[in-house]
Length: 314
Ligand code: NAD
Image 1: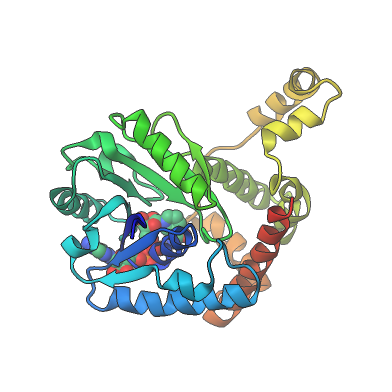
Image 2 (image 1 turned 180 degrees about the vertical axis):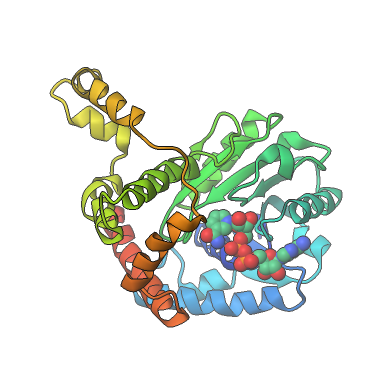
């Protein structure tokens, strides 16, 4: 058959999700894990999840759950897993040496046009790919957990990444139903985690300074800002919030935003003495034992599923 092959390296949480996403787009997916038997177990888990998604009418793609599972195969041998692939998505542990060494091994086994893509959340491409010879075909494709519902993928180039490799990956991600964005240069934290860090820092400071409770700052997001951010970002929000658009908005509100920004405190010490009160307050709302946390995670995933459904229809 002429079904194109993608190899997924590492069969943990993210590797399994990528396999489901690629299979939903009709690709043949080969999963490799260096723990013998692990990738076979992953397929059992994937099958269960796809069937649940089908039952919830949330299965992505045209094919049935069984047809999609049939596109996924497991390997304990790296060279067999890579045979025939045009695209490799790495999802191993978030440790620089582990990533550097697996990419070195992968490069020895694939043709020079095969795209090498890393799922890393926190490592920059120039470090991840420093041991690869031909870096023009390398990039980071950073997903957001769980990628099946949260579709953003940040494409981050190595300084040597060929523009065609960014384009091909952008096309692939779009084809399988993800929402790719391009960074033009690598930067620590990429875009999503930099914005998230800004939100975390100010939320932490507001609680630490006694301005607001843990519960209420979360409501500021979930009942306020977050309501629009699921559909329009900060730029469009501003553009729509003044009669004549963004320039008008900034004339009206720019100085106020600047004033507020200059009153922001320093980078918080998230682990210091001062953080204990915040952590206790959170744990009183939701105790940090396995039972309470997993109940809230299930709730989160159910809600994300509903939101994904809503977004699909708009
Ligand atoms: P995980 O621990 O669930 O899975 C890692 C898998 O990789 C394990 O099955 C392990 O056996 C396998 N592995 C380790 N070394 C290997 C090697 N040398 N060769 C082959 N397989 C190997 O981790 P995860 O949460 O799936 O994260 C994977 C990557 O995705 C990380 O880089 C992480 O930063 C990134 N990521 C994670 C999230 C998240 O929320 N979990 C979100 C975005 C990106």
